[in-house]
Image (cartoon, rainbow, N blue to C red):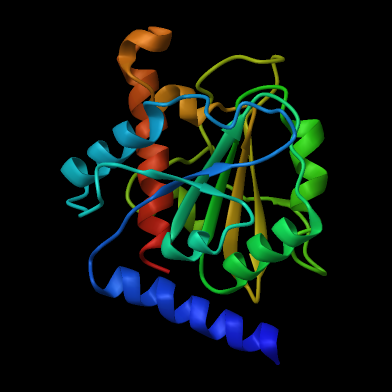
Amino acid sequence: MKNLVSIIYALIAIVGLQAQGDIQLALLKYNGGGDWYANPSSLPNLIAYCNEELNMNIDPEPVTVEVGSPDIFNYPFIHMTGHGNVVFSAQEKDNLSMYLKAGGFLHVDDNYGMDQYIRPQLNQLIAGSSLVELPFNHEIYKTYFTFSNGVPKIHEHDDNLPKAYGLFYDGRLVLIYTYESDLGDGWEDPSVHNDPEEIRQLALKMGANMLKYVFSY
């Protein structure tokens, strides 16, 4: 019963935050040695893009939040990235699971070298639910911009096709894991990776679709 009450209060907090129009995004800080702080300009640039192109009203300054902190319930969208090891404690898994069940959304972006560590952790978050590849006709690929072939390829890793996996709870997409895509790199300042502008635009548009999806469903 205590857990149910916590979920109800968390849901009220998330919905209330969106209803007030006071939306702030967060970057997830985790343990294990992976560089959770990679791509420092990515979230601010995505926010600026969405505020301008989609007329959103998101605080231009994202915050950093730890996996096990109750503060995660203040943010309807949390972004996670890195290259290396990821370790969630039992308490952190419970906290993140409750956040997702309560209405929160997590985007995990493999910045290369993260997959072998993060995938098992994600598959343990919600009992009875594991990562599934999102079909190209999923709504997240057409909420604002259209991606007929799924998540775009921004940076080359191992010459593999980019993929997006989803985690569902009660039929709702609560988490998207982008693999072999590197969206976060594409959101960074143009001078960081010197990507062609059309590639960077693809990354920003896909990010915009994710935020549009989160605030529409």
